[in-house]
Length: 406
Length: 167
Figure 1 (cartoon, each protein chain N blue to C red):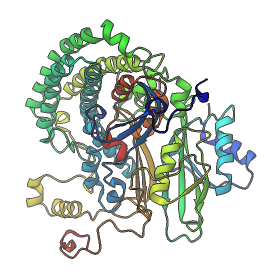
Figure 2: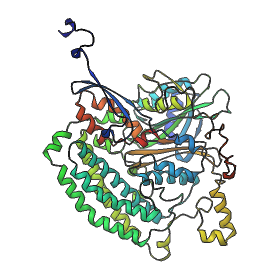
Figure 3: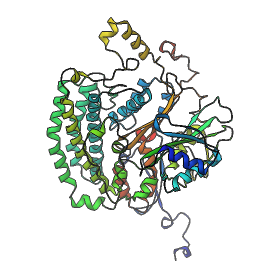
Figure 4: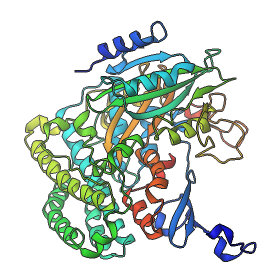
């Protein structure tokens, strides 16, 4: 019918609206752009542009010794930098063939699960903010602070942590760090329970998120989804189970899955993962406490060529001085080979493909960033939906600009 | 249970004498296929009832300027989620004519990854629906991850890196 009506050029009825969502829109929670073609409030088409904070990490990494690449990994998913750091250290250790003591593995698990909690906490509370509930966000920020204080106690920094070293940690966990961990373990379950009460069975929140931005399991796999977003669609793929690293096989935990892959399922999966992470931390802390005497002082592997010696030794021992010099000046050769190693980061499978020609720096390093890969489904997820649904779909996918652009 | 032996056997049956450089670095089966065959190999790995490599984990390129006629390697990492087996396979192309068939019809996830590979290495993925730059600016007229472009700006004279071991 409508094609028979001739409307004058440029008349309002004939047009759809083009809306620039981003690059600096508050609802994108990061620097990337979505050009939406709107018919009223319905989205007809969305075109995304990314790369606004591309920092050429892969190129830079080709001229840096292994230990100098750790700070680059901080800046991928900056909501959970410690996981990225650990993933990178584990990759290096795989290439170098280092044996890591169990205690180091357990300490790493504690740190990784803490950062998984802090990442999911942000994501879930941001979904709340974008659907109009600010309370939860302000409430849980206080408890993310507790996690950041634990990082601070261990490595001195909070956001871009560069936590740990190749082979272990730079120093043993202090008693204060364990005290802070205990405080967190004591206080956090009550907070998470309350956070859940605010959202999980909240009628408004449910109406807002159920059926919003859904994706079926086969589509999600085809789009390369991993992590909570894939599990929300009903696929129980988790790197911690499939390819255990850092002694995850020693822990007892379950992988929550959803069914429809919509915003509500993603919220629930993340929420349950926080409970599982909490349980893993408790188990790991218990295992750490079981080390007594000299075993309780182990915080790094014996890898003198890659692990910086203690400053005291550098000043008094010749060998330590040599290693110190070689490591700091980046003059340690690594074995030739190619290795792919992945970990379960907060957003999914974070992979490192490292090609070494036996030099001092990687010949080629590629980061498999989960965000970059699943973001391409966004156009399909929001098509035909309302503009306000696109906003919460975006936040429930946990799109982190740093991870997308690398 | 699917293992590297079986995969290798099935692939050599299907593509006799065409797949080379078999190795298993750190346990992951790795091989090289001729560039025009990449899609056929992918399709076979995807469709075969036993192989079922239906998840594309990663796709990227590596530049080897010294191997003339095969400077660019496109590397695929595939994952069989049912049997939990990963493999890696590579195709090598001439940098003067870097044509590789696009895997977007099989894996939606290849879309961004191929755009990224094009953006940084200039690999031309034939059949890609939208092969444009993704992370760099559109006006860029070179492919920055190729080895001839150094990391530090060589034209700068205000920096002296010699003291730091990378002059």
